[in-house]
Length: 311
Ligand code: ATP
Image 1: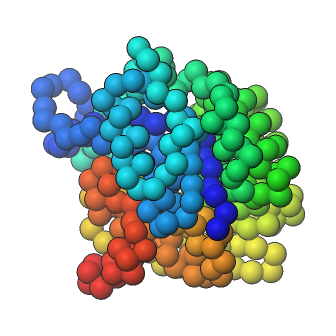
Image 2: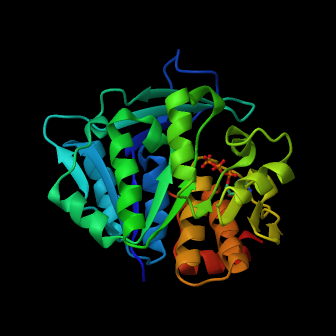
Image 3: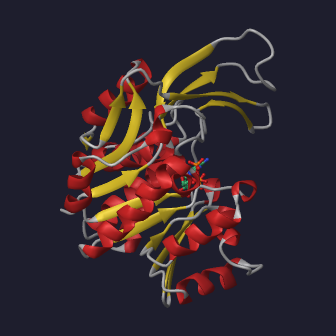
């Protein structure tokens, strides 16, 4: 089947085990957990047995090694991930507040990931892969932006397809980013926004108008993620909805990426949109029942069995 490629950040996440407002007192943590939205996405694709690879850069340290070991164990081709001597892998500390919101401390500004440069392994992956999944963060990072835009051209010139998950918040938007996003959307076959992200891309005020506007711009398929309210699929003249499964949410981080990895995997392997949505919805629900962003990615068997186990 077609090999899936993604590009983007790899980091570790270290999670406070007590709830509260921040990091101003000594407290217990759990981690490091492998993380980075594109890394979680591609780990989910690999676990489903779809050939896949990631382009990234980590430091030559334990945090980098932890991630590479996990991805390789889950069948992700890591030949395009550079391990940079003397540099560090990014990290994020997270503490949940009582209301479910999160406080982050990121150590990524000078991490190895920001200095991605082309090499022969990366060049080979750009020739080999037939599907590219991009996230907004790859465009907003100066170190990744050029590679991301180049990868779209490479994949498209070989007749491949592109999926795009914006993973952006309004406060991250700049005029340059807007221009790049428009360029990416023009090449996107499958668009996977969540909730309000839809409105970062159109001037429409309601969902129906926004979806139609995007379909009219040439995006063939749109999957809208709605968190604990499920998800919807849209294409010209078609719409399917799924309600979310009722589960005990332990850690919402990574649900959207697991959902996306499952959807893209089934979509590329010839499933109908309904079937891809069905499995993606399970993947998202299962992901939130695990502590740690990448800990809840699923094999096919785990997806099949989850609904029985969850009841
Ligand atoms: P993130 O960026 O935090 O990974 P996202 O906003 O991209 O997430 P969500 O909409 O939160 O994505 O989640 C993706 C999918 O996972 C949902 O559409 C749904 O199918 C499933 N999901 C998420 N949260 C829950 C939940 N609490 N219960 C059941 N299913 C959920």
